[in-house]
Length: 330
Ligand code: GYE
Image 1 (tube, rainbow, N blue to C red):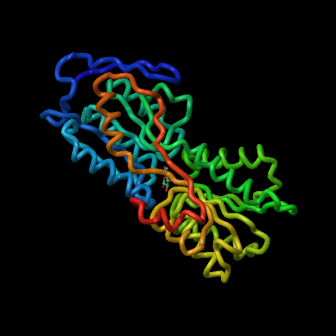
Image 2: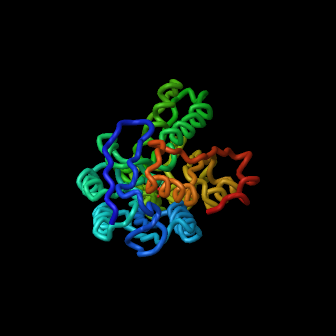
């Protein structure tokens, strides 16, 4: 195993050291042949977004001659399983570790172990707390605060004339995860900046799954009813789609009796939009496998990379759902 050392440098461009032995810096020792051995500790399989992301990364690795092997672990939304996966990658002396951290905190020890072993870590998708920024090389993924802001801009405009105040339900993603924290922050930051008169009637986690989104919504409707609730902001498609089911089963019309925003933009999400059951979609793009392989190779080669590379994404309102549906890849 080649040993690499890398010291943390603050924000901005992260200068990577060259592989300690200048020889065959492209070859993964773990694989025994040419090409890199990469370990990928994925969050789980909780959503269409996640499944599309896993497929994108696995397909890109398989098609890429520079990658000898991708060791893939599905951690079932469990941080302990992800930590164990990273530890196994360290034991196996992979060339690069890719981590999609389920939550933002609790990574210091295991990332320090990777650093001590000289194995660079690339974050894919989700981020971790700023205090641990020096323990990974770069993050490729979405700007979740920007996504929250996009949702907030639509809500602030749509409800600008709502004189008696906009009553909002929020379905948050996995507690402590970067997209849940940041989508919330960006959303309410814009509502406050725009001076919208609003009230958060309820805000709970649906763990990014349809089942939990549905069950949170069912309990809410049973306890409070839905009268007077203006807006549901769901941090992803699955929770929004689960909530839509609960709303329909209770005899209300989603998209009309209550306006709904979702984040991701899967085919199923767009279809619900075409059916008039939701009102705004903020796109989150999971198809970054090829871009990730480029970053992995750059990192293994000791090239300098940006600390954060955002994935491009858009927003869609009801006038655009039908035209966009055929373009959706997941
Ligand atoms: O929005 C959600 C998934 O981390 C961006 O995780 C990702 C989120 C995505 O479960 O559907």
